[in-house]
Length: 477
Image (cartoon, rainbow, N blue to C red):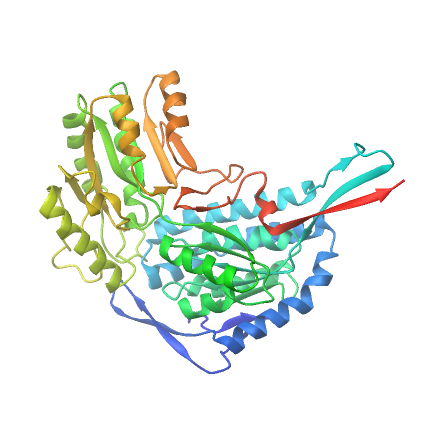
């Protein structure tokens, strides 16, 4: 099947007005996967105009009807999971064996948002004599979302789902590295019953994102990506119309393994966390702190498990478990961090691109002996690279775990319930896994970061609140 490369605006696929395209490369074959139309200023404006025209009528549709449409969209994701996973495989390298699981989770999130639609209520008050005062929650109108290249379908659903079930119309920008699945999903939303103009999906790089961030008639924007890009989105939003902003940014997630932990469980969880999407995930456990009494046992088992699960190859092959880096730039970045790490610590395994394998692959890599202050321990590498440290005391472990600008995810393994709760409270992260680690999340629990890992929360019982304004009504009686 030839992938769709046009923009999805006002319920139809259209080429960009300028005709400008950009190439998308298959990172496993290093060949061109597609030429995709790039949305420039005129295309963004066309999407905004379509959204403005469609949104007022959509807001008046009963909440349960909007919810039913979203549930149909969730089922269509499930029905087309193989195709969508294949599109991500050829443009950013996620193995289809992992991709279909991610799509199943994305569909669950849409079902969750649909379930919240009927429970978006205001408040009432009789506290002021002679008045009945009310609050109502209303959609912003025209909103925007920008999603990253590493989990394109999941992040699209986290933005489009709550936005439209709340009554908004959205313009969603895919990443220039992985636009194909998002463009295909546009037609699935229409098939589910979403009216034309309510979901618009466009492609482009940072220039397109800037056009959305600074557009004067877009009232809210949600962004997932790097901390650097998130700051640019927030700056553009503030400099234009002070639009509402939600940010889910990077991470440098710590995993603490205490002396009473079940080592086999910790090894399995740590392996999944760093191997999922070849380490190209913001909440990957990339800093592991192991109690000194367990260090040798853990490292031996972890090294065997991490390298043993890695089957590099064509992401379209169901047997492949480790895909390539998303492109040449990402591979180069990861390898440069590895070279920095070699100057400061010891490589236990990996530490290079594999020989004799075509594509932008990097071997599973484990470092030890790296200082907490080193760049590879401080900065987000976004690849299959993990650092193992040792610690002596609980206080030391918590202090070192929190010694980062990020705070997206943290986790710990212990059989002591009191310690689990005590340490969980002290870890500076928006999500904490206890006897589990990332990518463990749940649609009914909020997700977002402390510190430089973002602003606001997605998912959870209040997920629709990000996409609604609160209005107070004062009624004299």
